[in-house]
Image 1 (cartoon, rainbow, N blue to C red):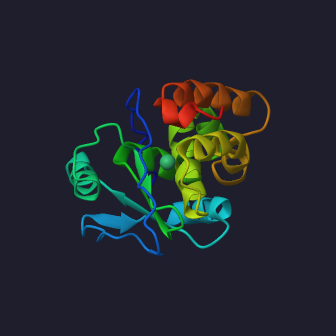
Image 2 (cartoon, rainbow, N blue to C red):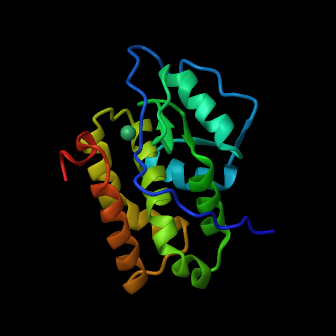
Length: 186
Ligand SMILES: [Zn+2]
């Protein structure tokens, strides 16, 4: 069964964890309400250049609770989290559902959904770049913008040409809505 394609929240920002000196793994416990989204791990590992776990949760109650636990405050715009240099990334419910839709979709269905997939694919790419050890948000988000076309074609069934151009047009709009730290490089 194919998961439903969820509506995307607007004006979302990717919020990431600060680097923790000497830590190889996240300094927090993944809540039991989260589960591995293994179908997304080939894409995350491709970007990270090493095995990467992807964790999702089904409800915004558990997502927001986790974000609050990690940051100590509410971060209502957060749709992804990763520890720079870590082994796991975390994706918010709607973005995760849309990625799970696309990874299983045939190209016709994926191409029809590019506007809903731009933010989620950018988010996954961004968080996976953090797993390489990059902590600067401007570098990470600019690299994500330039690497996501390959991720979209290779892992999410987007067809090069007009569909990929439409995906990237939506992705640049998404990117430019991000906080200033994320748009400092491009
Ligand atoms: Zn980030």
